[in-house]
Amino acid sequence: MLDAVVVGAGPNGLTAAVELARRGFSVAVFEAKGTVGGGARTEELTLPGFRHDPCSAAHPLGINSPAFRALPLERYGLEWLQPQLPMAHPFPGGGAAVLARSVAETAASFGPRDAGTYRRLVAPFTAHWDTLVRDFMALPLTALPRDPVLLARFGLVGLPPSTWLTRRFRDERARTLFAGLVAHVMAPLGGFATGAVGLVFALAAHARGWPVARGGSQSISDALTAYLIDLGGIVHTDYEVKRLDDLPPARAYVFDTSPTALARIAGLGHSYDGYRYGPGVFKVDYALDGPVPWTAPEARVAGTVQIGADSAEIGTALRAASREGLAPERPFLITVQPSVVDPSRAPEGKQVFWAYGHVPHGWDGDLTDAVERQLERFAPGFRDRVLARATAGPPQLAARNANYVGGDIACGAVSGLQLLLRPRLTAFPYRTRHPAVFLCSSATPPGPGVHGMSGHNAAKAVWKHLRRTT
Image (cartoon, rainbow, N blue to C red):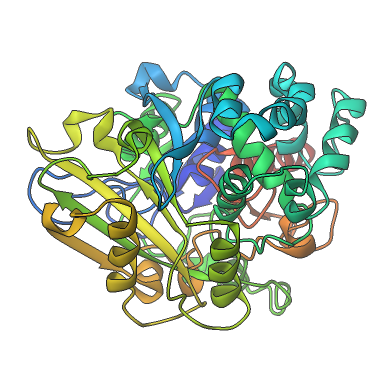
């Protein structure tokens, strides 16, 4: 009998398996797709030689993850590549605000009226980032914070809506960039704890940047898999699990799945009926005949580029997708251009590029034209660079990855109390009512992102169970 079976070979499932195997437990992973990866895959979606990331491509939370930093992933081929700028936010009239590694460079891009405000905002946390990130990515409610005063100070700033925090800024440049940071988790700008979302992304950039993985996000999943196999773990692909009886006998079952899929497979009835899924996304992967022709020079050297004319436009797009059930006319876009730092991703002189905008949950329309009209506002002539495109709306994203219910790449709405307390109100979010069944996906704290911390935290609950039942 195995000690643990993990269902789903995304970053969280693989991290949970690694953490258990490191402690001497026998582990097997079962993945429905033909390759490991979940939200961290790389595929030729458009033309031969163009290697795209179907989901996550830039990894501020990955390089800052306490779980990943404790593992020898570099030994298994993971290499982080840092663009000249982590992120840029261009404006229609030219120029851009930037999120740089340097606090001073970031502050200077906001203009003289807000530079000091930004420095004062992040100064209490930058020097203590590693302590802070461990505290808010650790087991919720059950782990004593390493620095309670620091965490409380962060909470005072971050728990109110981001719109409260951005009132500190006098000019639109800083407000717009910060609104874009919050929109990475598809949360309405006025929602609970959205200030913390923006601060986390900013502090992550100042600490270790927003890198891409050399060769694509698949290298993160491949490194975790290779390490797991070296530890004695086993990985099965092309193995769809529909019920617990499909799996070999084990002392614990760990699911890197959506809560509703877990309930269906494990026979947990209505355990997660109250769990909410959020808006979907519409994503376009591009093969380009050269760099994106951004008007703002800062955007040409940034790994990630946010697209939204101002904070009002970003807020309107988020409300349309999340509350009004409408596809926005001018979508807020998150774009990533890995080729600015990793030429191996495309043939010589060419580039890969992706963009996505928010749409209503389960929306089945085509946002391509709206996406490209937005891009043309900030990069005139963009369409002339397009060699091929691959589009994916909510139905296609859900077909690629069952965790993306209705196209929700966060595996659950990141709003209200569910931003912090997911998948339900409990001090033990990784446990289920079945004593041997656990949940480790991004539907559990600390939530979405390629960081493995949900798997790391769940593994702690699993090995406590295994020790008790030895």
